[in-house]
Image 1 (cartoon, helix red, strand yellow):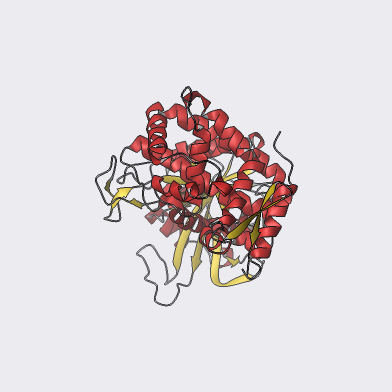
Image 2 (image 1 turned 60 degrees about the vertical axis):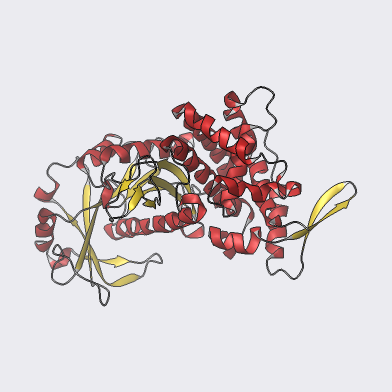
Length: 439
Protein backbone atom coordinates (compact mmCIF):
# COMPACT_ATOMS: atom_id res chain seq x y z
CA UNK A 1 0.00 0.00 0.00
CA UNK A 2 1.14 3.51 -0.85
CA UNK A 3 0.02 6.61 1.05
CA UNK A 4 -0.43 9.98 -0.69
CA UNK A 5 -0.73 8.00 -3.93
CA UNK A 6 -2.83 10.74 -5.47
CA UNK A 7 0.34 12.82 -5.49
CA UNK A 8 1.22 10.94 -8.67
CA UNK A 9 -0.96 13.56 -10.40
CA UNK A 10 1.55 16.23 -9.44
CA UNK A 11 4.48 14.02 -10.42
CA UNK A 12 2.94 13.46 -13.85
CA UNK A 13 2.24 17.18 -14.20
CA UNK A 14 5.91 17.90 -13.53
CA UNK A 15 6.96 15.35 -16.13
CA UNK A 16 4.50 16.26 -18.87
CA UNK A 17 5.09 20.00 -18.59
CA UNK A 18 8.85 19.55 -18.71
CA UNK A 19 9.29 21.41 -15.44
CA UNK A 20 11.77 18.81 -14.16
CA UNK A 21 14.11 19.27 -17.11
CA UNK A 22 13.81 23.06 -17.08
CA UNK A 23 14.56 23.43 -13.36
CA UNK A 24 17.42 20.91 -13.52
CA UNK A 25 19.00 22.80 -16.40
CA UNK A 26 18.53 26.12 -14.61
CA UNK A 27 20.22 24.88 -11.42
CA UNK A 28 22.97 22.89 -13.14
CA UNK A 29 25.64 25.51 -12.23
CA UNK A 30 25.01 24.78 -8.55
CA UNK A 31 25.39 21.00 -8.79
CA UNK A 32 28.52 19.85 -7.00
CA UNK A 33 30.88 17.32 -8.58
CA UNK A 34 29.93 13.70 -7.85
CA UNK A 35 26.67 14.84 -6.24
CA UNK A 36 24.11 12.05 -5.90
CA UNK A 37 21.01 14.26 -5.96
CA UNK A 38 20.24 16.79 -8.68
CA UNK A 39 19.53 20.31 -7.31
CA UNK A 40 16.53 20.67 -9.61
CA UNK A 41 15.02 17.40 -8.33
CA UNK A 42 15.58 18.52 -4.73
CA UNK A 43 13.88 21.85 -5.33
CA UNK A 44 10.92 20.21 -7.08
CA UNK A 45 10.60 17.64 -4.26
CA UNK A 46 10.25 20.53 -1.83
CA UNK A 47 7.65 22.12 -4.10
CA UNK A 48 5.74 18.82 -4.22
CA UNK A 49 5.85 18.59 -0.42
CA UNK A 50 4.46 22.13 -0.14
CA UNK A 51 1.76 21.36 -2.71
CA UNK A 52 0.76 18.34 -0.60
CA UNK A 53 0.41 20.54 2.48
CA UNK A 54 3.90 20.88 3.93
CA UNK A 55 5.08 24.15 5.44
CA UNK A 56 8.77 23.56 6.21
CA UNK A 57 11.81 21.88 4.67
CA UNK A 58 11.51 18.79 6.86
CA UNK A 59 8.10 17.98 5.36
CA UNK A 60 9.91 16.60 2.32
CA UNK A 61 10.16 13.47 4.49
CA UNK A 62 6.64 12.44 3.44
CA UNK A 63 7.94 12.06 -0.12
CA UNK A 64 11.00 10.17 1.06
CA UNK A 65 8.76 7.55 2.66
CA UNK A 66 7.13 6.69 -0.70
CA UNK A 67 9.96 6.24 -3.25
CA UNK A 68 7.67 4.21 -5.53
CA UNK A 69 5.66 7.39 -6.24
CA UNK A 70 8.17 10.21 -5.79
CA UNK A 71 11.49 8.51 -6.56
CA UNK A 72 14.68 8.97 -4.52
CA UNK A 73 14.47 12.00 -2.21
CA UNK A 74 17.43 13.76 -0.62
CA UNK A 75 18.02 13.75 3.12
CA UNK A 76 17.15 16.73 5.31
CA UNK A 77 20.80 17.89 5.64
CA UNK A 78 21.20 17.76 1.84
CA UNK A 79 18.05 19.83 1.40
CA UNK A 80 19.25 22.41 3.92
CA UNK A 81 22.67 22.66 2.28
CA UNK A 82 21.07 23.27 -1.10
CA UNK A 83 18.93 26.09 0.29
CA UNK A 84 22.03 27.70 1.80
CA UNK A 85 23.91 27.34 -1.49
CA UNK A 86 21.10 28.85 -3.57
CA UNK A 87 20.58 31.66 -1.07
CA UNK A 88 24.28 32.51 -1.12
CA UNK A 89 24.16 32.88 -4.92
CA UNK A 90 21.68 35.75 -4.54
CA UNK A 91 19.78 37.13 -7.56
CA UNK A 92 21.45 34.69 -10.01
CA UNK A 93 19.53 31.78 -8.52
CA UNK A 94 16.22 33.63 -8.51
CA UNK A 95 16.72 34.68 -12.13
CA UNK A 96 17.48 31.11 -13.19
CA UNK A 97 14.44 29.64 -11.45
CA UNK A 98 12.11 32.35 -12.75
CA UNK A 99 13.36 31.95 -16.31
CA UNK A 100 12.68 28.21 -16.16
CA UNK A 101 9.17 28.80 -14.81
CA UNK A 102 8.42 31.32 -17.57
CA UNK A 103 9.60 28.89 -20.25
CA UNK A 104 7.44 26.09 -18.88
CA UNK A 105 4.43 28.38 -18.39
CA UNK A 106 4.36 29.24 -22.09
CA UNK A 107 4.45 25.52 -22.93
CA UNK A 108 1.66 24.72 -20.44
CA UNK A 109 -0.63 27.39 -21.87
CA UNK A 110 -0.14 25.93 -25.33
CA UNK A 111 -1.00 22.45 -24.01
CA UNK A 112 -4.09 23.77 -22.20
CA UNK A 113 -5.59 25.34 -25.33
CA UNK A 114 -9.03 26.74 -24.56
CA UNK A 115 -8.51 26.14 -20.83
CA UNK A 116 -5.53 28.49 -20.73
CA UNK A 117 -5.95 31.92 -19.06
CA UNK A 118 -5.17 33.66 -22.35
CA UNK A 119 -7.88 31.82 -24.31
CA UNK A 120 -10.04 34.99 -24.40
CA UNK A 121 -7.18 37.00 -25.88
CA UNK A 122 -6.27 38.86 -22.69
CA UNK A 123 -4.18 38.09 -19.61
CA UNK A 124 -5.13 39.74 -16.31
CA UNK A 125 -2.49 40.09 -13.59
CA UNK A 126 -3.60 41.03 -10.07
CA UNK A 127 -1.10 42.59 -7.65
CA UNK A 128 -1.73 42.52 -3.93
CA UNK A 129 0.19 42.55 -0.66
CA UNK A 130 0.21 39.66 1.81
CA UNK A 131 0.95 39.85 5.52
CA UNK A 132 2.97 36.83 6.68
CA UNK A 133 3.30 36.59 10.45
CA UNK A 134 6.59 35.70 12.13
CA UNK A 135 6.66 34.15 15.61
CA UNK A 136 10.42 34.56 16.07
CA UNK A 137 13.08 37.15 15.27
CA UNK A 138 13.75 36.65 11.55
CA UNK A 139 15.69 38.89 9.21
CA UNK A 140 13.55 41.79 7.91
CA UNK A 141 10.63 40.87 10.16
CA UNK A 142 9.05 44.06 11.51
CA UNK A 143 5.85 45.51 12.86
CA UNK A 144 3.12 45.64 10.20
CA UNK A 145 0.39 48.20 9.58
CA UNK A 146 -2.07 45.78 11.22
CA UNK A 147 -0.10 45.87 14.48
CA UNK A 148 1.24 42.37 13.87
CA UNK A 149 4.83 41.24 13.32
CA UNK A 150 6.34 39.62 10.25
CA UNK A 151 6.83 40.26 6.54
CA UNK A 152 4.80 42.00 3.83
CA UNK A 153 5.44 40.34 0.43
CA UNK A 154 3.90 41.79 -2.71
CA UNK A 155 2.40 39.03 -4.89
CA UNK A 156 1.14 38.85 -8.46
CA UNK A 157 -1.34 36.29 -9.81
CA UNK A 158 -2.69 35.55 -13.27
CA UNK A 159 -6.48 35.46 -13.03
CA UNK A 160 -8.00 32.36 -14.64
CA UNK A 161 -11.48 33.88 -14.52
CA UNK A 162 -14.65 32.11 -13.47
CA UNK A 163 -13.57 28.84 -15.10
CA UNK A 164 -10.46 28.29 -12.99
CA UNK A 165 -8.28 29.52 -10.15
CA UNK A 166 -5.02 31.36 -10.75
CA UNK A 167 -1.24 31.03 -10.85
CA UNK A 168 1.54 33.12 -9.30
CA UNK A 169 3.79 35.27 -11.47
CA UNK A 170 5.50 37.52 -8.91
CA UNK A 171 6.58 37.36 -5.29
CA UNK A 172 8.58 40.25 -3.89
CA UNK A 173 9.77 39.68 -0.33
CA UNK A 174 9.54 42.87 1.74
CA UNK A 175 9.95 43.77 5.43
CA UNK A 176 6.84 43.86 7.58
CA UNK A 177 6.85 47.66 7.68
CA UNK A 178 6.89 48.02 3.88
CA UNK A 179 4.18 50.38 2.69
CA UNK A 180 1.05 49.21 0.94
CA UNK A 181 1.34 51.95 -1.68
CA UNK A 182 5.08 51.94 -2.41
CA UNK A 183 5.30 52.71 -6.14
CA UNK A 184 8.81 51.26 -6.61
CA UNK A 185 7.67 47.89 -5.26
CA UNK A 186 4.61 47.85 -7.52
CA UNK A 187 6.81 48.61 -10.53
CA UNK A 188 9.23 45.82 -9.62
CA UNK A 189 6.40 43.34 -9.06
CA UNK A 190 4.87 44.29 -12.42
CA UNK A 191 8.20 43.74 -14.16
CA UNK A 192 8.55 40.31 -12.51
CA UNK A 193 5.00 39.40 -13.54
CA UNK A 194 5.48 40.47 -17.17
CA UNK A 195 8.69 38.44 -17.37
CA UNK A 196 6.67 35.34 -16.43
CA UNK A 197 4.20 35.76 -19.29
CA UNK A 198 4.71 34.46 -22.83
CA UNK A 199 6.59 37.02 -24.93
CA UNK A 200 3.55 38.04 -26.94
CA UNK A 201 1.87 39.31 -23.74
CA UNK A 202 4.77 41.45 -22.58
CA UNK A 203 3.76 44.03 -25.18
CA UNK A 204 0.33 45.13 -26.34
CA UNK A 205 -2.94 45.96 -24.65
CA UNK A 206 -3.73 42.24 -24.26
CA UNK A 207 -2.24 42.36 -20.74
CA UNK A 208 -4.15 44.08 -17.93
CA UNK A 209 -2.48 45.07 -14.66
CA UNK A 210 -5.04 45.27 -11.87
CA UNK A 211 -4.45 46.50 -8.30
CA UNK A 212 -6.33 47.80 -5.30
CA UNK A 213 -5.88 51.34 -3.99
CA UNK A 214 -2.33 50.45 -2.90
CA UNK A 215 -1.33 50.88 -6.54
CA UNK A 216 -3.13 54.21 -6.91
CA UNK A 217 -0.04 56.41 -6.72
CA UNK A 218 1.11 59.04 -9.20
CA UNK A 219 4.45 57.29 -9.77
CA UNK A 220 3.00 53.85 -10.51
CA UNK A 221 0.17 55.10 -12.72
CA UNK A 222 2.63 57.31 -14.61
CA UNK A 223 4.92 54.30 -15.13
CA UNK A 224 2.00 52.28 -16.49
CA UNK A 225 0.86 55.19 -18.67
CA UNK A 226 4.31 55.47 -20.28
CA UNK A 227 3.79 51.89 -21.40
CA UNK A 228 0.28 52.66 -22.61
CA UNK A 229 0.89 50.95 -25.93
CA UNK A 230 2.00 47.85 -24.05
CA UNK A 231 -0.27 47.59 -21.04
CA UNK A 232 -3.81 48.18 -19.92
CA UNK A 233 -4.38 49.00 -16.28
CA UNK A 234 -7.19 49.11 -13.77
CA UNK A 235 -5.95 50.64 -10.53
CA UNK A 236 -7.94 51.34 -7.38
CA UNK A 237 -7.87 54.92 -6.11
CA UNK A 238 -8.29 56.40 -2.66
CA UNK A 239 -11.34 58.64 -2.25
CA UNK A 240 -9.75 62.03 -1.68
CA UNK A 241 -11.56 65.24 -0.82
CA UNK A 242 -11.26 66.37 -4.45
CA UNK A 243 -12.87 63.14 -5.70
CA UNK A 244 -15.55 63.40 -3.03
CA UNK A 245 -16.48 66.90 -4.10
CA UNK A 246 -16.47 65.86 -7.77
CA UNK A 247 -18.88 63.03 -7.01
CA UNK A 248 -21.30 65.44 -5.34
CA UNK A 249 -21.40 67.48 -8.57
CA UNK A 250 -22.28 64.53 -10.83
CA UNK A 251 -25.89 64.97 -12.03
CA UNK A 252 -28.34 62.15 -11.46
CA UNK A 253 -28.70 61.56 -15.19
CA UNK A 254 -24.96 60.73 -15.49
CA UNK A 255 -25.13 57.68 -13.21
CA UNK A 256 -25.29 54.28 -14.94
CA UNK A 257 -26.59 51.15 -13.13
CA UNK A 258 -23.85 48.69 -12.24
CA UNK A 259 -24.04 45.22 -13.77
CA UNK A 260 -23.36 41.65 -12.67
CA UNK A 261 -21.24 39.06 -14.55
CA UNK A 262 -24.31 37.71 -16.34
CA UNK A 263 -25.19 41.18 -17.62
CA UNK A 264 -28.15 41.77 -15.31
CA UNK A 265 -28.45 45.09 -13.48
CA UNK A 266 -27.22 45.19 -9.89
CA UNK A 267 -29.80 46.83 -7.67
CA UNK A 268 -28.64 49.69 -5.47
CA UNK A 269 -25.33 50.38 -7.26
CA UNK A 270 -24.40 52.96 -9.92
CA UNK A 271 -21.28 54.08 -11.79
CA UNK A 272 -20.15 57.36 -13.34
CA UNK A 273 -17.02 58.82 -14.91
CA UNK A 274 -15.36 61.89 -13.42
CA UNK A 275 -13.58 64.55 -15.46
CA UNK A 276 -12.36 68.10 -15.11
CA UNK A 277 -10.06 69.38 -12.38
CA UNK A 278 -10.03 66.05 -10.53
CA UNK A 279 -7.77 64.64 -13.30
CA UNK A 280 -5.14 67.38 -13.04
CA UNK A 281 -1.69 65.99 -12.29
CA UNK A 282 -2.54 62.52 -13.57
CA UNK A 283 -1.33 61.03 -16.89
CA UNK A 284 -3.14 61.93 -20.09
CA UNK A 285 -5.63 59.29 -21.18
CA UNK A 286 -6.45 58.16 -17.64
CA UNK A 287 -10.14 57.66 -16.91
CA UNK A 288 -11.52 57.98 -13.38
CA UNK A 289 -14.61 55.88 -12.71
CA UNK A 290 -16.51 55.99 -9.44
CA UNK A 291 -19.09 53.61 -8.01
CA UNK A 292 -21.70 54.35 -5.38
CA UNK A 293 -23.87 51.72 -3.72
CA UNK A 294 -26.14 51.18 -0.79
CA UNK A 295 -24.07 49.65 2.02
CA UNK A 296 -24.86 46.20 3.32
CA UNK A 297 -26.92 46.07 6.54
CA UNK A 298 -24.67 46.84 9.48
CA UNK A 299 -21.84 48.25 7.33
CA UNK A 300 -20.12 51.31 8.74
CA UNK A 301 -19.88 54.31 6.43
CA UNK A 302 -16.73 56.43 6.05
CA UNK A 303 -16.31 60.19 6.04
CA UNK A 304 -15.68 60.07 2.29
CA UNK A 305 -19.02 58.39 1.57
CA UNK A 306 -21.83 60.56 0.27
CA UNK A 307 -25.58 60.69 0.97
CA UNK A 308 -25.48 57.39 2.84
CA UNK A 309 -23.90 55.57 -0.12
CA UNK A 310 -20.53 53.79 -0.16
CA UNK A 311 -18.04 55.22 -2.69
CA UNK A 312 -15.21 53.42 -4.45
CA UNK A 313 -13.07 54.61 -7.34
CA UNK A 314 -10.55 53.28 -9.85
CA UNK A 315 -8.48 54.54 -12.79
CA UNK A 316 -8.07 52.85 -16.16
CA UNK A 317 -6.78 53.58 -19.65
CA UNK A 318 -9.30 51.29 -21.40
CA UNK A 319 -11.54 53.23 -23.78
CA UNK A 320 -13.40 50.59 -25.80
CA UNK A 321 -15.92 49.41 -23.18
CA UNK A 322 -18.86 50.92 -21.24
CA UNK A 323 -18.03 52.16 -17.76
CA UNK A 324 -20.34 49.58 -16.16
CA UNK A 325 -18.36 46.79 -17.82
CA UNK A 326 -15.07 48.35 -16.75
CA UNK A 327 -16.34 48.68 -13.18
CA UNK A 328 -17.36 45.01 -13.15
CA UNK A 329 -13.94 44.05 -14.50
CA UNK A 330 -12.23 45.98 -11.72
CA UNK A 331 -14.53 44.58 -9.05
CA UNK A 332 -13.53 41.06 -10.09
CA UNK A 333 -10.09 41.87 -8.72
CA UNK A 334 -11.50 40.47 -5.48
CA UNK A 335 -10.58 37.02 -6.82
CA UNK A 336 -7.00 37.90 -5.84
CA UNK A 337 -8.07 37.45 -2.22
CA UNK A 338 -8.88 33.82 -3.04
CA UNK A 339 -5.42 33.40 -4.54
CA UNK A 340 -3.87 34.81 -1.37
CA UNK A 341 -5.93 32.47 0.79
CA UNK A 342 -4.73 29.52 -1.28
CA UNK A 343 -1.14 30.74 -1.03
CA UNK A 344 -1.44 30.87 2.77
CA UNK A 345 -2.61 27.26 2.67
CA UNK A 346 0.33 26.36 0.42
CA UNK A 347 3.47 27.29 2.30
CA UNK A 348 2.84 31.01 2.85
CA UNK A 349 1.34 30.70 6.31
CA UNK A 350 4.81 31.55 7.56
CA UNK A 351 8.35 31.95 6.25
CA UNK A 352 10.13 29.04 7.94
CA UNK A 353 13.76 30.15 7.48
CA UNK A 354 15.74 32.87 9.22
CA UNK A 355 17.66 34.80 6.56
CA UNK A 356 15.86 36.91 3.99
CA UNK A 357 17.88 35.30 1.16
CA UNK A 358 16.72 31.86 2.30
CA UNK A 359 13.11 32.98 2.48
CA UNK A 360 13.35 34.35 -1.07
CA UNK A 361 14.17 30.79 -2.16
CA UNK A 362 11.23 29.59 -0.08
CA UNK A 363 8.94 32.02 -1.94
CA UNK A 364 10.11 30.50 -5.23
CA UNK A 365 9.30 27.04 -3.86
CA UNK A 366 5.83 28.23 -2.86
CA UNK A 367 5.30 29.63 -6.36
CA UNK A 368 6.40 26.34 -7.93
CA UNK A 369 3.87 24.52 -5.73
CA UNK A 370 1.11 26.95 -6.67
CA UNK A 371 2.03 26.62 -10.34
CA UNK A 372 1.58 22.85 -10.13
CA UNK A 373 -1.74 23.23 -8.30
CA UNK A 374 -2.93 25.53 -11.11
CA UNK A 375 -1.50 23.57 -14.04
CA UNK A 376 -2.88 20.19 -12.92
CA UNK A 377 -6.57 21.30 -13.04
CA UNK A 378 -5.93 23.23 -16.24
CA UNK A 379 -4.48 20.18 -18.02
CA UNK A 380 -6.26 17.23 -16.45
CA UNK A 381 -9.46 18.17 -14.59
CA UNK A 382 -12.86 19.12 -15.98
CA UNK A 383 -16.21 20.25 -14.60
CA UNK A 384 -16.44 21.14 -10.93
CA UNK A 385 -13.06 19.58 -9.98
CA UNK A 386 -11.45 22.18 -12.26
CA UNK A 387 -12.41 24.80 -9.66
CA UNK A 388 -11.22 22.92 -6.57
CA UNK A 389 -8.82 24.87 -4.40
CA UNK A 390 -5.65 23.35 -2.88
CA UNK A 391 -7.24 22.16 0.36
CA UNK A 392 -9.93 20.25 -1.51
CA UNK A 393 -7.44 18.80 -3.98
CA UNK A 394 -5.38 17.47 -1.06
CA UNK A 395 -8.36 16.05 0.80
CA UNK A 396 -10.04 14.36 -2.15
CA UNK A 397 -7.26 13.53 -4.60
CA UNK A 398 -3.73 13.69 -3.22
CA UNK A 399 -4.45 11.94 0.10
CA UNK A 400 -5.94 8.88 -1.61
CA UNK A 401 -4.06 5.65 -0.87
CA UNK A 402 -3.49 2.95 -3.49
CA UNK A 403 -2.09 -0.52 -3.93
CA UNK A 404 1.14 -0.80 -5.90
CA UNK A 405 0.92 -3.75 -8.29
CA UNK A 406 3.31 -5.04 -10.96
CA UNK A 407 1.88 -6.35 -14.23
CA UNK A 408 3.91 -7.21 -17.33
CA UNK A 409 7.02 -5.72 -15.67
CA UNK A 410 5.22 -2.39 -15.22
CA UNK A 411 4.12 -0.80 -11.98
CA UNK A 412 0.59 0.49 -11.54
CA UNK A 413 -1.31 2.22 -8.74
CA UNK A 414 -4.67 0.61 -8.03
CA UNK A 415 -6.94 3.03 -6.18
CA UNK A 416 -9.78 1.80 -3.99
CA UNK A 417 -13.07 1.51 -5.85
CA UNK A 418 -15.06 2.78 -2.87
CA UNK A 419 -13.12 6.08 -2.73
CA UNK A 420 -15.64 8.68 -4.00
CA UNK A 421 -13.12 10.45 -6.24
CA UNK A 422 -11.27 7.49 -7.75
CA UNK A 423 -12.84 8.21 -11.15
CA UNK A 424 -11.58 11.80 -11.00
CA UNK A 425 -8.06 10.58 -10.21
CA UNK A 426 -7.91 7.90 -12.88
CA UNK A 427 -9.44 10.17 -15.53
CA UNK A 428 -6.91 12.87 -14.72
CA UNK A 429 -4.04 10.39 -14.98
CA UNK A 430 -5.30 9.28 -18.39
CA UNK A 431 -5.49 12.89 -19.63
CA UNK A 432 -1.96 13.57 -18.43
CA UNK A 433 -0.65 10.40 -20.08
CA UNK A 434 -2.31 11.43 -23.34
CA UNK A 435 -0.34 14.69 -23.45
CA UNK A 436 2.80 14.70 -25.60
CA UNK A 437 6.10 14.21 -23.83
CA UNK A 438 8.24 17.37 -23.68
CA UNK A 439 10.77 17.58 -26.47
